[in-house]
Length: 458
Image (cartoon, rainbow, N blue to C red):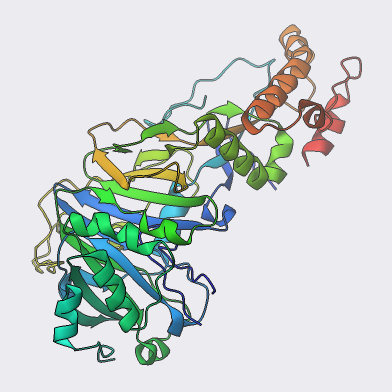
């Protein structure tokens, strides 16, 4: 059997198996690279916009394969109606990812022989078709304990909402309707049935997909109200052969979100690393994450970013505009001043008259069945403290500086470079001997050393 992957390939879904750096002022950081989801081969992405008990959940689609073979099953807290399900802009996850990804920045030392200038920071911190036919044998469904609660089409997807009394019956219903359940699914379905959750089942309507003009399946977005602030990940573990990466973007009008039933740990940040990492940033971040993951016993959620989306420092991408925020599920934005056009009802309710502030939390979870026996439970907080995974290349001053301060500055560079090397080794597990071989050599007796160093930087 071939494991079919998609946007909830390991997250919410039970997959069904069928057949040249620019100069910058000393006080400003210049963004040069980011650790986005492209670093990971098996990373799923989910965006959750939530205020009070209302949630809009966007499931990104990284499905690779024939559209006819795509299908998914997602536990949901309530019976969803057609107006509560929509297809989302396929670029919205890319925008969230680009804005919140951990980033590499570079700073430039000032001339040590010149007096230090003070700069105004402007409030930012200084650096440090008709639905597919469904089996309609009501007696058979009743015997299985499965009820078709709703059935409709949205975009290129045919949607069915199911309830079930026992996992064996649900397994039989899915098999009778062309879904093959991987081994172990039956047991993982039981907890959701005990919690009286419903099951969101989606397939691709090939006729609609072929006429849609899209070459890839678009994200699915669902809206619901429930006091449960959670993300069911256990079903996706059925097909997991190894640890899986999950990136969760939580959008809130309040502040930072955290995982309630596992520890939330900040990713190592605000450290100076050698300049050569600029050309190896992907390898650096993956190695650093692996090291942090092992040190935390592989059962924590890492905070990679937390910020009000109205600004950023430094910016790896422009903040999302109001239209993009709405596409991401943000439903509490106020109606624009001077317009009388009524706001559309999304999921049966009009947007809440709340603050237009949007705070984003980016959580990175790498999980396995043995280390994450429970679904992810979240809690939102009023904490609006900014945080970002941020790694700094501090370029030394490259011109001659013959004053006493300049000589002291230059004399201290070898120690500084070695401290950066030791930091890099500690973060990544890379051998310090190998790192030191890549460091520049500073000849303190040669006033033209900076020419060789400049060549190294280039």
